[in-house]
Image (cartoon, rainbow over all chains, first blue to last red; front, side, top):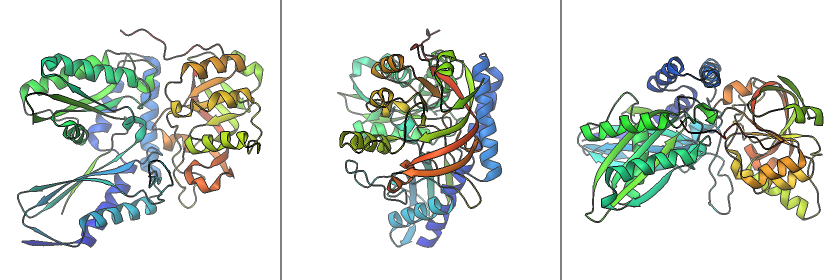
Length: 279
Length: 176
């Protein structure tokens, strides 16, 4: 057993909130740069250039890359040999409270979805927990903007729809989203499980490094094919046309029922923020 | 092309979908809650909190400024959420909107009838756009926080004409 104090969690979450909103991870930055060199449209190259300039300004001035500093989403892995000295959900929310205040990040959460009064501190967060082997805690964080989140979709396909059905649903969802989610986008796809599980793993897919691919070969192939098809839609950066509509497609799968084929698409904008820490 | 805000009719008629512009002058911020409240205020007879004639509304909810900053990150938010409120404001003289993404056909029709322009700013470019904002004043609905209506003075604010006053859109294109 290893004891972990809540103050450690609060501090780590606070730092992650600020850091993730000020600076993109290398995989996303590299992907935007490499898009610039392969992009054929002049307008698209100008927009991609503006995006790179924006990243530099945010980094230099230590300010948020985008004003939508998101709803705070966490995937937390807790080692079964960890003893938590306190309420981890409360500790994560306290970290968010402190990070969003100290980092001058926008409070974007309303307490009741219908009455819509801002909670003022960007809490509560959305948190998924997993119990894993070991005596460590891994916290994965992504501030999720809603320009892109609003463009997500779930469809309960029939088993007979198969891989073609999945392909069509993903492409249709991206085509319909068009310029709204701030392309070039990162596309998270969840296939399998139940309706809620498909959505959860689609979100989890957005946390994965853009340079990685799915360990199963047929899924990795689907990721590459979908990326290529999406980039042929011609939507382009900000929807103004071009070859760069998506920076990457990440798919996660889960076993499912004999009667179903749930598919969820969760879209992220080009400010695809994610951060990880290990305690 | 450099243009001034508020807009005059000559400029509105000159702008074509696809033009890149740099806007200088006064513009107003307003997003979901501010739009809802503006329409409620109109319906209750109270009127709008500012004279909307020839003005540009920028759909944004900025981050709070750090000490020494004028404004925090301030990129555009997705425009279609304002669609149900927009025709009314266009009828009252609104001449320009800055946001990102698609608009519905009723907005486009009303833009043509009332001769107005929809500009796209680049989503996610909050830090770059903040550097073009030279002054900020909250003029209404302070209680809405980031969604309050702010009067901004901007210099060379970068945007693209997405839909012009004749209803032509940069998004209308064939798939390859």
